[in-house]
Image (cartoon, rainbow, N blue to C red):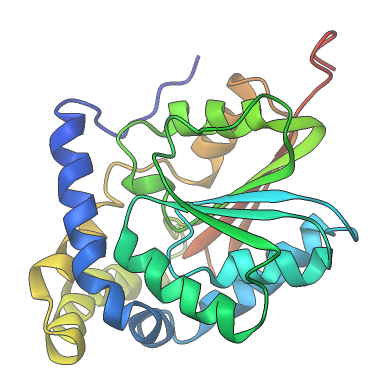
Length: 249
């Protein structure tokens, strides 16, 4: 099995640190996402939704849902299907809950404070399990993917939209300069959070590139794994299908 390069030693320490980061940046999270990605995260999510092709009435769990933008998109696409947004940061969930209430989706979407590595749901519950811009932050990404696979129905999709590693020069050099030098400065200027935004680029260092992550999806038993590098590899979409629980096909 291909092993994740994400270190899992002292996972509790990492988990606590990540929690503190997202609790503290919650008030400016949406604004900073727009600025730091040059609004590209919206196009990436739109591309993802097109590939997922959510049908009316289908259900999903959105892990590490943050302020719930993707959860809301899933709910709108399904129309009537029950959605769950799960995050360990209550501050993030509180901001998401306000958006959901304003859109009158609070009866369709349920928000839960919980751990992505141990989901409080039975096997084969959802049509989709999604995680956006958070897989690199968990203590054990393979365990999270296993849990996502466990809770989706046979034929259901496990979907990750995440930052990735560009390979094309000179774009690669420009990207890393922006990500490692400019991004923390903007975090300090706009959100008054330098250390938190300095950590975000560091979280990508040990994270697999899009080919390595696709291999992890496959090695964990997902079928028909597809990987889509986005915007020169700055982000990547991965989609895997859960096989039949009896035959594995």
